[in-house]
Amino acid sequence: MVEYGGGTNVQEALRQGRLLLNRTSGTKQIILITDGQPTPFTSIGGDEDGGNRGPLRRSPRATDETLREVLRCTKDDGITINTFMMECERHLSEFVRTMARVNRGRAFFTSPSLLGECILLDYVNNKRRYAR
Image (cartoon, rainbow, N blue to C red; front, side, top):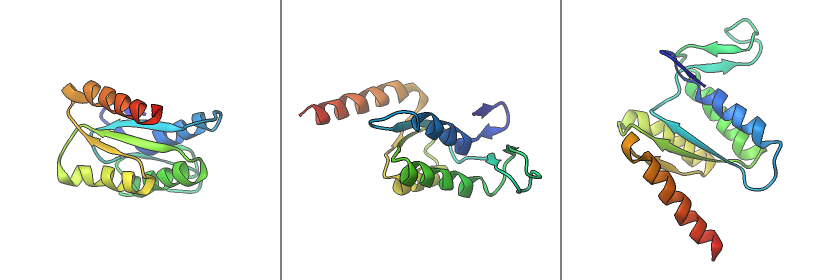
């Protein structure tokens, strides 16, 4: 979910992807395109938001809550998360590396102008590998 001026709720995006993929069979994959760490997150019941489901802005808990969702995707549903990161600043890329390590997905570090090429090359390379 992208909100103007509010950051990116990566946790909620992964949750929505997980719920959609639960209805399918076969290979399950989420492709995440991001520019850094998650800033808001969604609280479910009994937290700082008074028990209502809603986005919390720029909470320090956003990283932890997002990694919890990564674990749900990984362990509960067998979903691979491949992340394309648009920034290369070390402090921003560390979260993406951690997420890839937890999920055993892949992390690609690219720029907006090379994103399409990067996705296409990854797709073609993997298609060749699985076709053999």
